[in-house]
Image 1 (cartoon, rainbow, N blue to C red):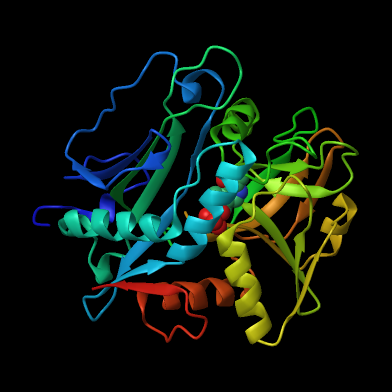
Image 2: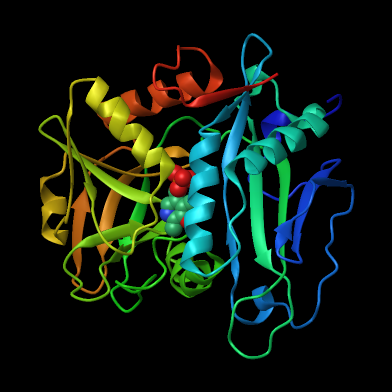
Length: 339
Ligand SMILES: *Cc1c(COP(=O)(O)O)cnc(C)c1O
């Protein structure tokens, strides 16, 4: 796109040309529809508005040196949305249709895909909501699936750098047997107050502990947590963590680099033994952690003294980015090229 300052892009809503929609009515999903409207017309008693029947996804597409557009882990995101649907009793959107809708939306908005050199990418936001009216608490009989996209800037504008994180023991993000493993809006509503508090104090995110015992690490705001020690990638296992596709990918890369991987409960005190720590998710791939302040306990765990990320975090980050942009081969079959 001409006259677009790709380098000044942040992570925010930007209007693009088209979105793609699909309605579930009379017991079946309809055809994909193209829309140029930014708004949706919805019943005031829609279940997404009252009872949180809504789930979303977040993935990215990247333009390579060869001019090709690559979507990262399209199928995984389609499957995770299905899992979220199961979690809150919504009508599942077929994987094939999901893939088709995302590809269609990218093609329709091709002029918004940032060029390779910019370090920016196209963020893809699929959304599925209950639209049927319901006043008693029960699932809707109508649903809307919608995909929209927008260009987003490189996460690390001043280079790959660490940020501080805090533990706020007076808040929980998700209950141990609740909806933490699903990518649903309700979990985000619960994280707004602690997130705001942390930001006001200069932290980039809240590191949540398990809600039951407050003994183990859960996840880090909208990202999974990992620590590195003795050539081992350690990431928490819990019944309230959202299964990050970035984390899953980093695990495979770590193994392919000859590292050991441990997915298990991680006690808070173990933080003092990690050589490196980071958060991972689609937005940044890896956001390395400078230090973690456990505010109630007045304890600090430091991983970087001068903002420089650890060597292994940096290596994992570079490798994943290289696969996403097509700079390196895709041995794991993660990429869908938009033809
Ligand atoms: C989306 C999300 C993540 C990151 O998942 P990715 O698939 O890596 O983007 C982590 N935690 C929560 C709570 C999320 O919603």
